[in-house]
Length: 201
Image 1 (cartoon, rainbow, N blue to C red):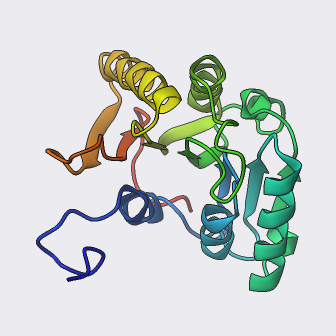
Image 2 (image 1 turned 90 degrees about the vertical axis):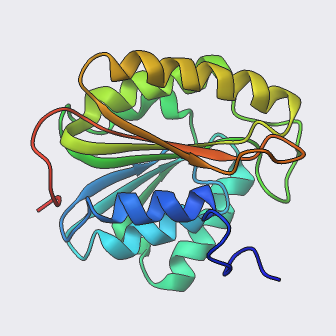
């Protein structure tokens, strides 16, 4: 039986991230893929921001930027994406405060790459703070955490605590993921910035 299509199982966190994030996007939106990886989210974002939209994609690994660029080019959206081989901590150097409709993080290591190279607690938390500054009122913050490996456990706990504090300042938040699994399952944390809600345009 396929867990991907069986409605008795929860959706994958990445699928829920797309479902929730898609509600905030439209032609002309500015969005950030904070962890470009192999480019799956980058392509998804580029398709949804339309001809006048813009995707800012960050990754510290050259292999990730190259893979993401190829996938975006193959999809025909290269003109909509700006790639930055640098830390997502500096995203607010490229987007004015209050200008971004959605910031997406897909934490952990690069699939098919060196599993020893992962996102880390300190830089992730700093990047989340930057995301709060660039998001517009009603904009979304999407973070998929992977507590199934040692570094991921530490990072996921820190991100969860950070989101809990965020909830005390008026952000609307939700958590999505399977429970009771043999290994800690990936989960999504999604938040909306206080202010106007609705589509990006």
